[in-house]
Length: 491
Ligand code: NAD
Image (cartoon, rainbow, N blue to C red):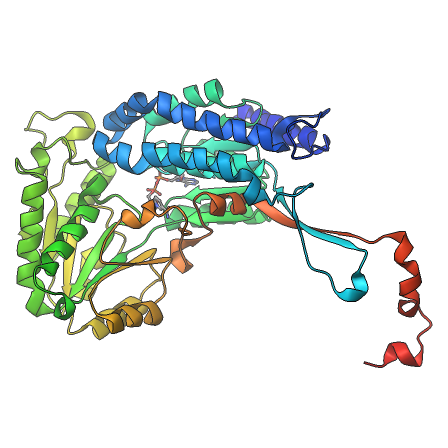
């Protein structure tokens, strides 16, 4: 734990030295201090980050196979490719994020009487920051915030999740090999370590995880007035507007919902949590889910290397408990590995993709409609109409995402106008995360702050306004000084 104090002191010293260096954005400018704030340095670190992930893609994938039993295809698609692409883009676009010009910042328009002044907004690094990442997509959810910190010029301490120890240890080995150890460090450990880390003063905390822990971290941050980004989760609903889906479209909708649910065995912050649908369309929807699952996993999901596992024994027990306690009817799946199948380690913690139909009258009280499921379980909640579905969604916490499947323009408008959520997605699931230029994040219980790319950079900078008033303007200021006169008191 004393090491944490030393790391904090070293990172702070790096930042202070760089502040005193008066570095201009041009890489050719000579400097006397640490180059952390120069654009060339930041771009180099971003390129190094891309290289770290590219050169170690196999080891990173393997670490998640060991820790979580996560299929390689999922890691490559959702994590490796995205991190490399975004780090490279960050290096390329950094200058425009910062706001180019002779000096870093953007000039603002002045009133006529201020002619001769200079006024500018600068985006300045907040200082030494803390990044706390979760286990479910640990590669992207560690490196994506780190890209933002690097781009902003902030030294960072990274605290990966203790739930993925092989990944976290690998991260601690790789970061000093590729990135500047004076500015970017990794701290391993669990609750005692993070508790100690949170006693220290950070310039910003970027936390991705659950709302319960977010409250603990927010309370610690409040002691230092530390600003935060909270990337949280919640129950993201799916509204199926069966009446407005053309021939064969319900089948496509079901395939897209099920795909979003089976990725990482449902352990995604944006997983479609539950389905709201009118009773008339439920039988066809279930059959389409079954067809989709059979096509994804012809040999059965639990026999497929393309299907993920539950991250820990505690979560495995929790998920099996949900299946035990629901009052709904299991119509697809429902099974779990029990240790007799010869699968080992994380791969022994398998739960089948499961669809459960809830009873309309009691659904709202069912265990599956309480907390975020974070499991490959898809509850179907029969509702009388799309209007009733929207009413249910409005009456609950603002989700990270609302998914709606409809071909009706007016329903599309109703969903957008009549609800609140961090994101709203029509006719697909999960893949909205591949749209690089939209801000991703929550509202209310699903968190605040945004990523990726420029949006993440914005989390780690503060806006500093600079106003320069020349002495030569003094003759224009006669009227502002006391004593007042009739002209200066009139509007
Ligand atoms: P987790 O258990 O790995 O915890 C996240 C981090 O919090 C870890 O680094 C852990 O060390 C730390 N932590 C745990 N207990 C703590 C405590 N008592 N005090 C301080 N720090 C503590 O991951 P998780 O929270 O189970 O992750 C899943 C949650 O994250 C879900 O709710 C999911 O929706 C959400 N999530 C959100 C996003 C997003 O971008 N919005 C992305 C992924 C996951």
